[in-house]
Image (tube, rainbow, N blue to C red; front, top):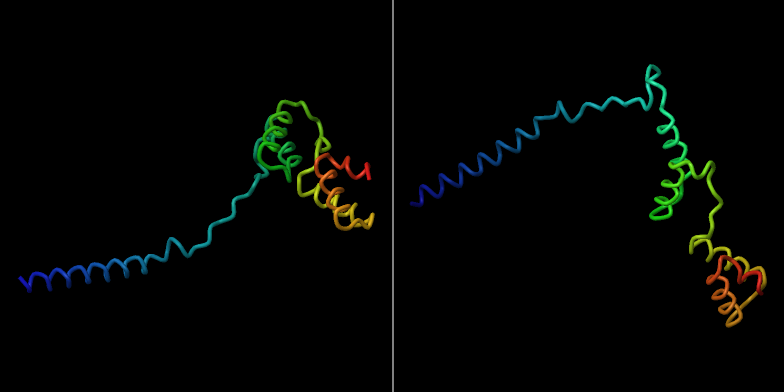
Length: 131
């Protein structure tokens, strides 16, 4: 019985070693660099109006994410927006930056700054005009 166990172990080791070298030798398919694919060949058909609209809307949607991008792309592809609309509201990060800069410019500190920042961040920069 011990001979069978040793034989099985030796066979498993040989197979594992053989598989490892087989994979190591297969370098012809993975080492060749892939040829770059041209974005638009010169002999390609011109884009349809819908395809051109997709390209234009996608360029205009740069920087938008999530639902904001989804809503923008939907309306843009329907032709409802000819150009990129001005953002209706700032992102939270933009508000923080603007309000903080305004507070610094006004030299606010302590509770006065805290109150100003709270008011400023609740609106789209309306708090900045209030103080």
